[in-house]
Amino acid sequence: MKIPAFRGSRQKKPKLRFSKGGTGRSQKSIVSIKPLSRWHPNLRQLVNWTVIFGSALLCLLMLPTRFIGMELLGIGPNWLLIWVVAWSVKRTIFQGALAGIVLGLLQDAMTSPDPTHVLSLGIVGFLTAMLKKQRFIQEDFISIALIVFGMAVLAETIFAWQLTLMGDRNSVHIWTYYQKVALASAIVSSLWAPVVYFPLNRWWQRLKLAQQQS
Picture 1 (cartoon, rainbow, N blue to C red):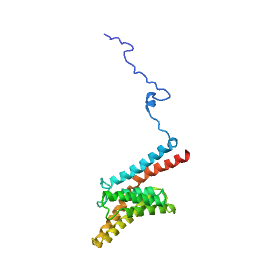
Picture 2: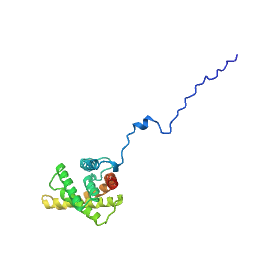
Picture 3: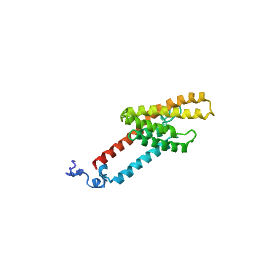
Picture 4: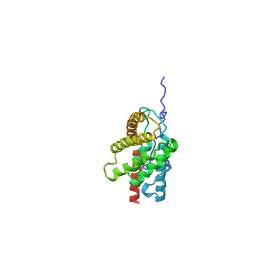
């Protein structure tokens, strides 16, 4: 006995039709952000100051942290020194030195003011801005890493020199210890310098371009 076949028993899947404009509702739900050049100047300035203070505060809070792969011989990156270098390569000598002094005071408030970090970070900001003014450096990752390496060695040397002048510690032990600290800090800080430099440099480049176009 043959079982009769019924035509149209199989259900056909409905075909989905898309308009040329896209998905319709999903496109309307996407919020479009205006180009930076069309922002109000006061809004751009407010966002810029927020980026400056927020990044500096983040670097300050990152100083006592130790993540896996971010330390060498127990020494972590000098985040504030990296920030001062990233700031000073685009600023005047006065602005670079002032940023180093302010961040040095903040670091003294978190650690100890004796010996102070103001002197080392102030000199770092001053020298970095002076190198940029004399056009001895270029704004690329390799140049920034080399500057951070040299400035980290200089900063640790100034700190050890202050400890020696205090006279309450053995100078031989101080310089033996800080030779290792300076080298470890310089290596780690130079390796992590692009993490701070790249987003800040990217933002300041876009901000400068927007100010020229507006």
